[in-house]
Image 1 (tube, helix red, strand yellow):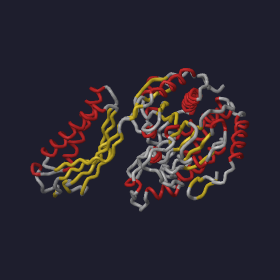
Image 2: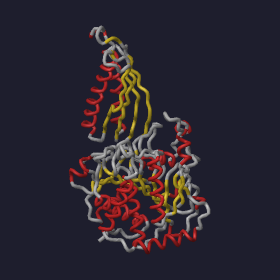
Image 3: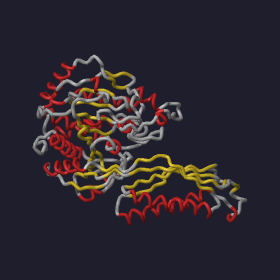
Image 4: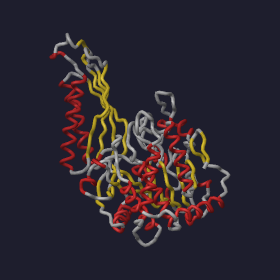
Length: 468
């Protein structure tokens, strides 16, 4: 796997026979490390190595397209190759390592979403982070996917389908205002408008994808080999407390919520804070605060009454002119609403309009709402959910079904192929912060579940893969 300043790239002259020999050689070498202790040590080393690719003064920060991200991608491509995977970057900028079906040579002309002549299973997550994020969000899923490959190599198991290990590009929300770049591309959801966006430093999104090896071709079309994909699987930390609180090893996700964002603009009249009477103010910040409080109460009521996952948050707010001696004249804020129920969403939006109208009247301000982004609810594939549940049971792990509160790449993959995601516990439910933590053992257990599921998809008897 070669690399340059533009990230890992494939060598179009790779000899497929040599690739096959390398894969089989790797299988023999990796037979030497098969104990549970060796597995957790390997997981720990990979987690620590990826954690080192961070802004030095702001751990753990590895923003998509940053120098830290580029370096981490190069390292990961080398790890993929060392595990015997045939690596390439697809047109959407996803890093993919393929373990070919029956260990036959890979047709590299078809490796970028070209029409496939054989079935495949995808397992992966992402290695980019939010600013000052954690060491496990996304990363645990990529490392667990690699553990599946190590198990197959250790036991010299051939599969009747290609196995693709994927680092999906840019899952976290970025400066171009869009998350899940790589999985959206696979689903044909990256529009020319999104690709044409330019950030504050003048970087165009399409150009950045091209810089790391993507082509942006087919961005508005579903991956052409979608009908050959048997399953898209992902492991992720829960980012909540349920598994830890109830003592379960695995969460089988039933659905990824619909995520909807709205811009709320509140316009009043700026004025002198010392001379403008309290009863003659058009204070935009007071009106905004009224809206925020009302939304919080409304969301709490809906979550209780619907008995399904529902949250609403205003986490970004800008005040103008933002002076200590000035009555605020304008507020711009962003509402993030997530719902596992279409009915709950409808109830919220109807009441939300009333809240905005009433606050505008009460505080003599104008309130405008603009839709910013929307991703509908993504139910997981029932057959894969059952496979994963069976895989947990055969490995002696406790599992429960639960809804996700966060968005994931799997939501977009589920639009065109069978998809499912499992959660593992994380300490105190903390995520998107340096304190984020899950154990190496928890990642290993999740990898056992993924491995047993893959073996079942290959038509092999359901079996435990606990490494002794």
